[in-house]
Length: 181
Image (cartoon, rainbow, N blue to C red; front, side, top):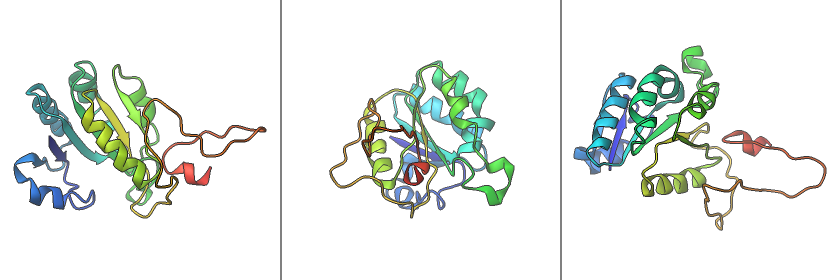
């Protein structure tokens, strides 16, 4: 297992992993396309790779590299896009990721998962490490986002989670918006 980041070790809370496993952690600097290339090479050598940066950079700026090197080749790379949606709005439009799901959905072999709270994100990470399929994990929340699921929740990648039954309307949501929905 390798973890790569494009200069977001502290913001992604990866410093602990980096200190425990320095030979398994690579900070590529602000070079998202290169990070995708490095992740692809490590996956081609048999590793499971998690690569993380802002959603807008991994799903938009690096899209061609993700398409050519990860999705078409079905590589074991888990792309983690942080600050999805307009969570990073203060940083300007370059950091907005409102099209990222559409872009990733257009790629073959790419599974997309948008965790709704921290516990679900934790379970998604374990699931991601157990599969060899390419994956885009879209994180739209913050470390203090509302908890949605209770302690009995078990993530199932093939099912839609139903939080409340009703008879008048169906409300669909993903990521941070689930708490509002």
